[in-house]
Image (tube, rainbow, N blue to C red; front, side, top):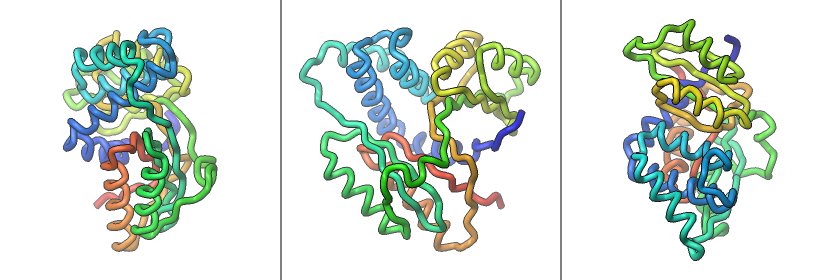
Length: 246
């Protein structure tokens, strides 16, 4: 179906995070905790944000016991450390749009650290809304088909019946896109049908992508994105950089 494939971008981020699984588990646990406290419910069926966080946790193979323990802790800990959700927008080298979503207990510290990374690698942090207008919030589900276990027609039929908005076939995966509000329901139906996800998350998907040709720009954007993703306060980094294929 129509749409721009972003699996190569997801692979890049996913690979970096797979190498730091303990850290990503900590970040997902924070997402789950905030979702429980802000939604006043530990039941994903009654808490859309929690359902999205749990779907993401499962895609990263976070053990069910860890997920349940995190939810129970959030429900039972009135004195749990408080985190604020903050978003930073700006440009990287070559005009690449970069959005950073963070959860922090110290806004000044996080803003300073993220601004430094924008500046150090040839970009600049802008004002709210300066690049977010060029992104759309969507649910993104990547179904693994490396072993060719799934028939294409069946995947399309099941995804559309589940409420998917778009499906793209790409190499060894199927990319399933949903409206943000439908993500939890669609991912739940597909998971119950036995599909294995390698990625499942509500994302900011760019409307267009930028490829860089200058060696220094490529080096700087990849270093900047890596360091942003590695920051303890950062939950997600969205961008419209597309790496050139060799």
